[in-house]
Image (cartoon, rainbow, N blue to C red):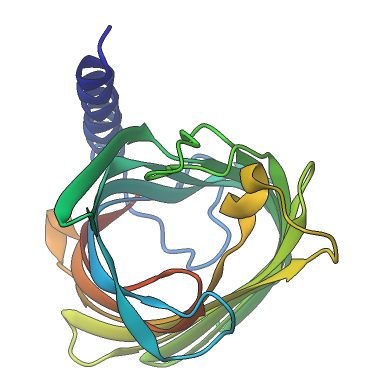
Amino acid sequence: MTAAGKAARTTCLLSCACVLVLFAVSTRPAHADPWIPAAGHGVVDPMLRYFSANHAFSKTHFGSRTYPSSQQRETQLRITGSQGIGHGLSIEYDLRGGAVQEARHHAGQQVTSRASGLEDQVIGLNYGLRQTRSFADSVTLNAVFPTGSTSPSPALGTGKAAIEPDYQVGIARGAMFATLVAGPRVFLDGAAVQLRSSISLGYRVTPRFRVSGSVFYVRTLQRQQMVAVGDRGEIYNLLRVGAKLEYLPTGRLRQFRPYIGYQDSLAGKGIHAGRRIVLGVAVHY
């Protein structure tokens, strides 16, 4: 099978999986638990994300200053979610696939590189510690599977398996909520450890609409020795902010929550500085 055929097959499989999940959950009643889902309940969140950048952050230090670089565009299908399995446990997942195009000028000509297919996948087991309607925290052990291509121009994955223990906390007060997820991503056979954290603040401005803002931060701790070329995909340093508008329907469609989001890169090191548009629908069942 050709590369184009493999890419088309991957896109088709991801789309079919998304449709099947949506069809399955649409026949189940909504569940009111805002934190760890009960057994047989959960949430699935398929989304399309479009990223575009023609500038990059410095390769030598972490900061907000950017420089002209190759143009990078990515169209990504991402499916995240949580499935309750009982006894305070849930399975969490972050599945990704997409198409990346990178164009750069060399010797007076534009050279374009393309890659498409699966990216690295994350699946974890989450255990609730304290669970009330206004406060909850939990611990998660995620496994990162290197299913993405490591072709350097452009790459879709790191090529290295990793584990990611996280601590999660959520607070809800009336129309407001806040969540925090933080923990390291440790590569099992690599040269770096990533420290990752994400904060989200939201407010229900009307009975049907909710707005939220988010901050995502990741810094990479490198070993002292030179990082091998095959390990450079692990080096990830970024500060990104985002905003999201979510619609909360009632009646028979109350479990479907469509949204639109925008994300912008504020600071980083050795990475493209770009913007992202996100369209998705969170389905609670």
